[in-house]
Image 1 (cartoon, helix red, strand yellow):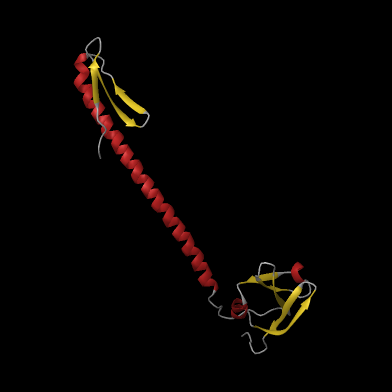
Image 2 (cartoon, helix red, strand yellow):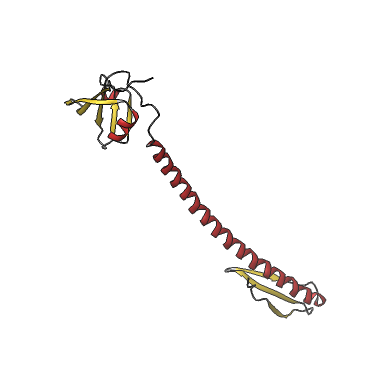
Length: 166
């Protein structure tokens, strides 16, 4: 920590000598004694204030560094949480789910795979999947045929008869 230099100015009309330093660019601190007998105390006060200003600047720099490190850590934690969610999604369930009835798998305009109610198509209920692996890992199903309709190509999906729930 380097305190700014304190300058003692020339004597005023009563012999008092003001002291001052530059706290930061554009900021000057002036300590003015009341009488010439207070000149020494004014210099000690100016030096103390200069030291405190330097310490405050160092503390602010340390805080900025800690804040930057905290932001980096927060970003890392958020990334790791997203990765954990993605990894957990790949863990197969203890028992794959069975469909209530036939369904269709089709891709949307963004290339995402969906499992949809065949009677309602895109207007019905559906599940967005990470891909074919996600479909077969989480559902006890099989593909029965491939076709196309007014909404585009699809794959018919039905419960796999070899998979039985307990």
